[in-house]
Every structure is written in structure tokens, then in C-alpha cells.
Length: 241
Image 1 (cartoon, rainbow, N blue to C red):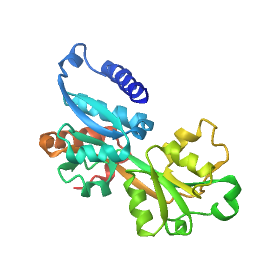
Image 2: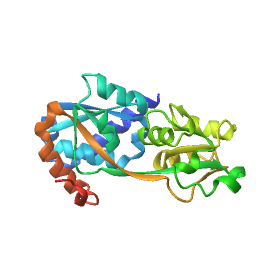
Image 3: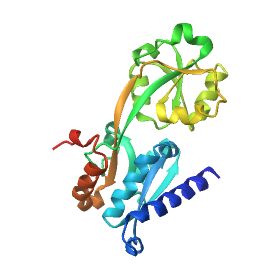
């Protein structure tokens, strides 16, 4: 049901974006590219819409296939149907060797630690990866920045498929902390179900997000880079030359 609702969301967004084009032009967009994406990517609604708009401007429809984060990366690396990866950090480029990273960042991840209110006395000042090492942590499977840094600092951590599961582990005292991007965590926490959860006052790390396109579509990279520069002006100055 969740996957169905996400596809409906995409359909509505695509129809809304079609208003930006001359009458009849949307019917000419017969070429479709399929992108793998973590379920949580749909918390970045504005970014998603702008990417779809960029592809419309070069004559392509976009089909976004949501799935758990780890599977989304696996499909991108091993499956022929994937034309691009919606958004990943630069670190992911090591695994995405058959993809070209569009050099204009499309967003920013702010990664925080989350703890129970009754643990605030000893955990409220967590502000670095190294500070996590004495504690048990839950994070999202396929969240490469977290797994890389938690392993580097020898943190005892468990990985879950969905962000909600991490907070359930926290409330049940199975872990001391949850490490997630702020946007993903806020989507779960806004329901009020986990009212005793608190966010660390400072982030553990900030990372830019990039769009990856399979090398078989490299001819589109220059024009997409241009459109991304216009659609994401707040990040365009950091484009690598």
C-alpha cells in the first residue's frame, strides 16, 4: 500500500509539472528513464519535483521506483533496468562505478543523533561520530555515511529497513541512540508517537546529495548539468569544473 501511495504521489506531481509546458508538449515526452530511490527520498518533495522538471526540459519522463535504501543501491549496481539514482552522497560514487555524478548538488543531508528524554543527562551533548563509540546505535540499512562512520569509530550498531523501526528500538531500550538524516527522522517523529525522543543540539555531519545517471545516458549530462544549475542555484557555485 505504501509503494502504491508513493506512485500516486508521483503521478500527481507529474501532472502538476505538465502545466509548465506548452499545450501538447507533455504528450511528446515518450521516452522514460527509471530511477531507483530509497523510500525516504519522498521526504524531499521539492527536490524530487525539480529533478522531474529538469528531465522534462530535455524530453524525458521519469519513473521513480521506491524501495528500501540498501536494495535501491543493490538494484542500481546490479540491475539493467536502472537508468539513474535519484540522490546519493559523493561516497556512493565508489559503488556506482557505471554512473556519472551530475556535478551540481541537489540537496543537503543533516545527520543527527536521537535519544530518549530519560537519557538526556548523558547523551544530550552528542555531537560527533567518535562520541557515539560507548553506545549502542540503530541506523538505516543502506545509509552509507552512517555505516561508514560507525564502523570507522568502532560503534556497536544495528541496521533496520525503515526509519520507524529504529525509533521503536530506541523506545524499547534496545539501543541508546538513533542516527538518521533530519528530514527522515522528522517524518517519523511528526506523528507524535515518539514524543519522548529528542534530537541532538548539533549535527554529526552535513553531506551534499548528488544525482547519478547511468553512463549509457552520458550524452544528457552536459544539458542536465545546465538545468540543475538553474534549478538548484543555492548549490550551483560548488559545481566542479
